[in-house]
Length: 177
Image (cartoon, rainbow, N blue to C red):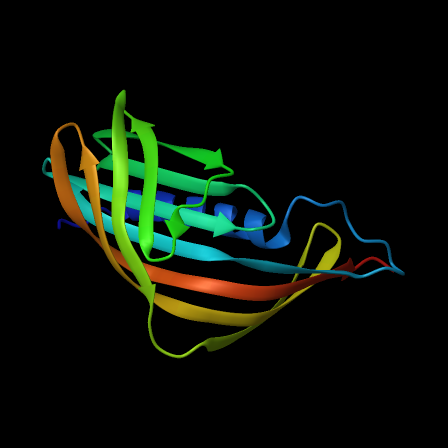
């Protein structure tokens, strides 16, 4: 696949927003006396590929505490089409994966399998955001994927990394004294 720095930068920024929105949720800031802790489980699958000689970026994000998000971008700076959609529908059921989105006026389908492999990886992160101190503890577990994008009568295999399942405890407390 040819290199697409502009696409990669846009995608990285977009994914960071999606992932951060999901991890910190949509709740109001916790009061100084009352930290809140939620358990958040889901998947993150980011893929690249080439379809009709055009670079592709695709992302499936699930979080059981907020809506799930699919994003697909096809093309580069010269001519790029794509979009994203939030849904209550899960993309992964067992080992089967499926997500659909209208891209450039045509239906795009990501389908295939994703299975857990390897050991659980411990995760710990702390950061401040919007007046809250957020502590994240839990586990990631890698997903081995075999996914295909079908769009405008063509199909292409996708290379996915990162691809993982997560199980996290997210604690939010006021960062304002």
